[in-house]
Image (cartoon, rainbow, N blue to C red; front, side, top):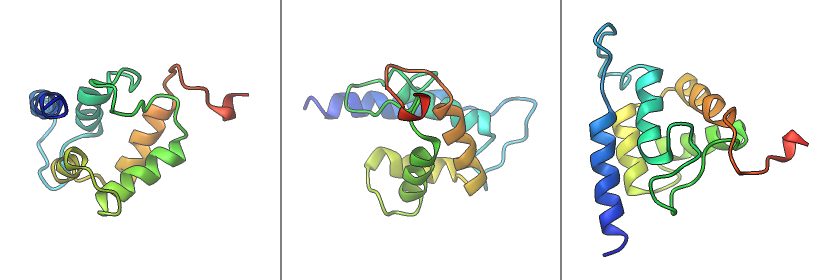
Length: 119
C-alpha cells in the first residue's frame, strides 16, 4: 500500500501540470512543447530534477546527459519498463530532439549528486 499511494499522487501531479501554453498551439502528435515536457518531468522529479516527489524516483539534476537521453529512449522504445514512465512516453511522445533537450536541461542543473565530469 505504501507504493500505491505515492504512485496515485504522482499520476495526479502529472495530469495537473501537463498544460499547453495559451499562446502555443497544442500539438497532440508531439505531446506539446519542450517547456510542457519539462513541467511534466518536474511534477515527479522536482522543478530542477533535484527533489523527487518520492524517494524511489531518481534525481535527474546533474546526471550525465548521455545517461538521461539513453534512459529516456529506452523508456520510449519499450526497452525499459515502468508504468509511470510508459504513461509519460504515451502522453509526451518525445522525439529524439526532445529527449536530447530534456537530458541537457536536467543534466545542467545542480544537485547533491557528484558528477565525475565536474572534477
